[in-house]
Amino acid sequence: IRLTRADLEALPNYVPGRSPADLARELGLTEAIKLASNEVPYGPLPGVVEAVTEAARQSHRYPDMGVLALRAALAERYGVAADRIATGCGSVGLAEALVRATCLPGDEVVFSWRSFEAYPIIAATSGATAVRVPNTAGHGHDLPAMAAAITDDTRLVLVCNPNNPTGTALRRAELGRFLDAVPTRVLVVIDEAYREFVTDEDVPDGLAFADRSNVVVLRTFSKAWGLAGLRMGFLVAQPEVASAIRKVITPFSSSLPAQAAALAALGQEDEVRRRCALVVSERERLLERVRKLVPDAPETQANFVWLPLADEAVPFAKACEAKGVIVRPFAGDGVRVTVGTPEENDAFVAVAETAL
Ligand code: PMP
Image 1 (cartoon, protein in one colour):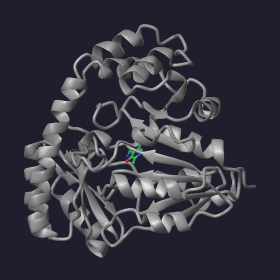
Image 2 (image 1 turned 180 degrees about the vertical axis):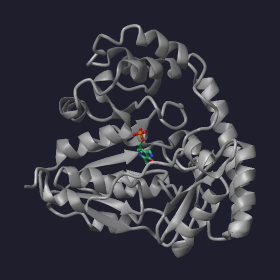
Image 3 (image 1 turned 60 degrees about the horizontal axis):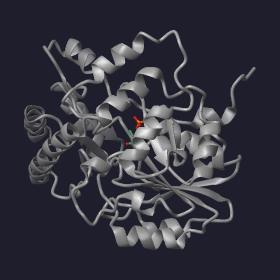
């Protein structure tokens, strides 16, 4: 007897980074280094632990389902009306809700590939068809090909900018041209999980496009804001779209501690900027050293670098892991290395030099 959908068998699992504590134990080291999940390495922002502790005193109560205080703070910070904002259990929870809100079985979701590994999974769980458009030779989105892939059945297009796992970023003019080319009956999600690490001024802030009726901007507190473990993401869209998402999202999936932590984090923007500047300067240093080993590593606007190692990706990641450094391989394609502290990055480069 089959109790779950047959098509789920073909679905890959979302692969989380390995626990550094487990690896350290296995290797008999005092600690292992994890550069696998695009987290920022500086710990929670000041005030976050206190806010979560305070929220825990009310943990026998449900959180505010309307997420009113946080949505008001986000509205103020980003200069949009609160009815245009929805929050969710990470931005991946919102991405899933976007598919649910737009696609019936057989409808199509178009995205670049390789991109964020959750995209094909969230498309498939709704019974939608994932349409993968191959990246350009430079590892970025092929926007003309993506526009050409849109059919009468397309409901959603996912644009990841900067792109996970390659770090490449679309420029203002090309993204504008693409949005002009997409029919307004198709929702375009600009996933900006790594927006805070962008330094190239020609890489547009997706919010500049958010007044278009069919554009959604997706952001997360997991990366620059340091709340990956608490799970909080948000989107900015037209009020009708944001309202539909608030309907389909799992009720209470913006938890009490996550709402409190995000509010506290928003009060620490100066510190976030300082941390992002550290990440960016380490990113440039890491990329320069990586390119001595892998000359075709692309320019990156995110908090990670991409090593297009093709069939060497998995053996390389295994060799790093054997030396206590966890990186993220994508079989047959490449390895993504998150920017860590200067010491962590030095340790990675030392291991990479012997592994390659
Ligand atoms: N979008 C992209 C492009 C990502 O890389 C990630 C995290 N890896 C997410 C969304 C999801 O992040 P979260 O659910 O933690 O907000």
